[in-house]
View 1 (cartoon, helix red, strand yellow):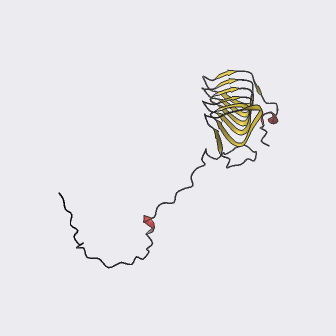
View 2 (tube, rainbow, N blue to C red):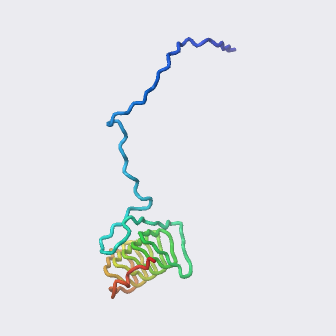
View 3 (tube, helix red, strand yellow):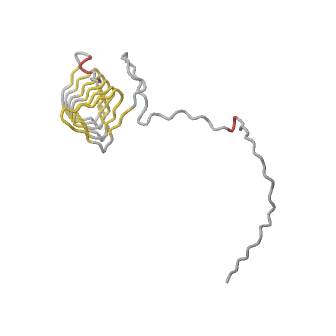
Length: 170
């Protein structure tokens, strides 16, 4: 049917060129990028007089995590976002219970934000209950904010001493 006949290549070879490296003009260089932000959040900036780590990252306990145990205590010197479920006490600089998160135990932190469920006491310098929060337990605080729609069943009292609302981070 078809026959293929090889024919010699008719192209003429060009002489080899030597390449010399050239520095591209500054305008054509790629811009220098800023360092990437921390993987799980931004650094914490504290406005109070206590000395804390400025670059403490946010730790995240995802929706698929369940942590439980007898006399369990979770401690963090940074921020903690809880999207999963914890049965135990939590101590930290800043603790947020996300909308999908739940804690059965005492939360002690300088700043506590609840968007999900907590069954236990909240002890914090600043406690915030968002509209989606459901809290069953007592609150010991220095400042408190409760958004319209939040569900809260318990008592509230001002901390007699700062040590009452100071987390144990040792």
